[in-house]
Image 1 (cartoon, rainbow, N blue to C red):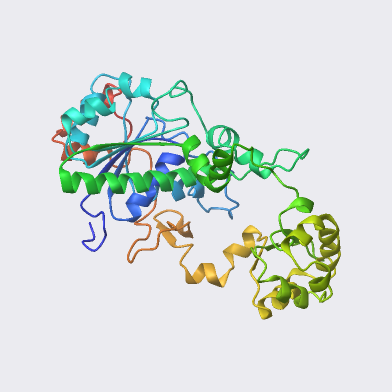
Image 2: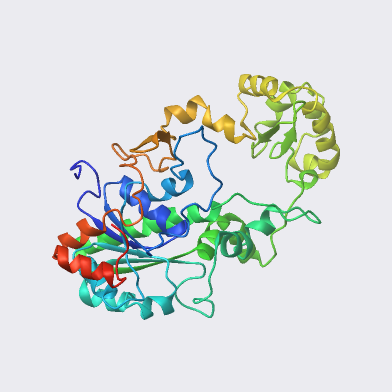
Amino acid sequence: MSDPTLPLQDVRVIELASWVAAPSAGAILADMGADVIKIEPPGGDPFRGMTRPAKLADGEIDPDFAYQAENRGKRSICLSLDQAGAKEIVHKLVVDAQVFLTNLLPRRQAKYGVSYPELQQLNPQLVYAAVSGYGQTGPDAEKPGYDYTAFIGRGGLLAAMTPPDGEALLTPQAFGDHATGLAVATGVLAGLRKAERYGEGSLVDVSLYGTAVWALGSVFATGLGDGRNPKVRDRHHELTPINNRYRCADGRWIILTMPGSRYWPAFCEAIGKPEWLDEYPTGRDRYQAMPEIVDELDDIFGSRPLSEWAAVLDEAGLIWGPGSLLEDIAADPQAEAMGMFPKLDHSAAGAFPTIATPVYLEGVIPRGPAADPGADTDAVLSDLGYSESDIAELRSGGVVGPA
């Protein structure tokens, strides 16, 4: 049942997408109240079961936690797009929808009859969100792209995070996918506003590559402006010693971010080095002596555990953050206060935590768990006017998957 207080409670989204980037946007829209109908192949979205199995006790059911995070609150139907009759079903769904969300490459959009021009003919106000590695135009529009390749690699994140002569970093799974999902949701909301106000549809073209460049915008903007390539700095060659990271006695990292000079006096007093105020009075002095200062700070921070330094820096009113472990975040009272891990109630697996949409609006929470593959096929087709015998015929012909 729809909730009239939710911002998207009167919006229907048809999601023909798999893996993470596009489905994560669908999950955000579902949290905001949209009726998201996910079209899966008969075997289900290939992301189902792709992550490590959960560590469960005997008899417990693995609800596929990673898949749940990207697909909670959606309905699922299974269609074989290669079969005659599938396109008709998709077109019927689109006629009464406000949003079509897909990660099919342009050639596959055309092959299955779900390109933007074709669907716009059916529904001129449709917001068509196309999610890809490299966009819908240009020489690489048909090139497949995943998080590691299009976002982390080609988008510059790997180079920006790898020190000179350092080994390429292994970045977290789906890091770029989720950033892209937020961009997609933003574009969809803008498209809905345009449709509501002007009666016109929109093509929302969001790529992993483009989102990565946006994420590095501060770096790229400077480089584009002055024509110089941005530098990747190691710890001993940052611009200031208090915009850096240091390992504490317990092996934990502490991150300092204090731009400008106004924090320098309080920092020197807090760490027991008041003489540095005379030795390095200006930012240029500190920059020129960075290797020596960092070596000393390594010794200083390495003398006490993170918890003790946290108390010292907090008392001095300085800006810092811990290099958190995942288990730290799960137990963080601030994360709990922000509602970052709401519960999903699964009929077979029971209640378990998931990850909240990072846009906090009143009432915007996960609406329920992800559906089993094709769980809503019969109900959705019935709403489209297909009879039981029609559905049985479609199923026997391989057009639709299991109920």
